Amino acid sequence: RMNIRISTRRLRRAELAKETGCNLETIRYYEKIGIMPDPPRTATGYRVYDESHVSRLRFILRGRELGFAIDEIRGLIGLVNRGAQTCAEIKECTEAHLVNVRAKIVDLTRIEVVLAATAALCTGNEVPDCPVLEALAS
Image (cartoon, rainbow, N blue to C red; front, side, top):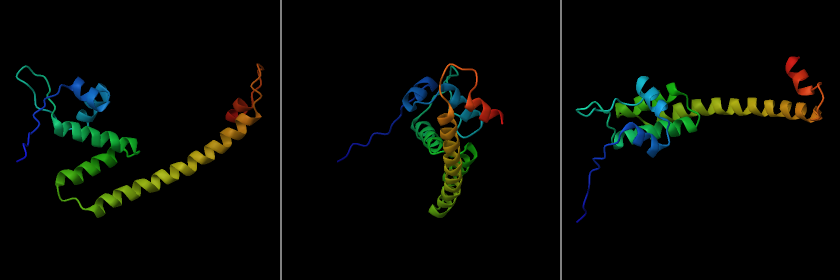
């Protein structure tokens, strides 16, 4: 027979921040814009977070790591909260995001080429004339 224990952990915001590696101000911001649910409060007014908050925050943070914008994450959370999300809906959001990521890669590659060529022109000497500054000014 398995012993199933339901987690009744109650965390304060600082503990939630420490556990997830998220900044306190970022958690406040996510609550303010509504992508983190409001936590219940103790009788003394302290916010208390549970495992659902930890999971939601990790979901948001992972989405941000993957480059999803806040509105895209809000949309994904909306699909999940609705409880009737389909893989097709999630795939559509992900593919749209992938198109944006690929466009950024193209832009970054172009920027890399220009910066590398410009930096190669620079001698690095202690002189007032600098090809990098000239390239930026032109």
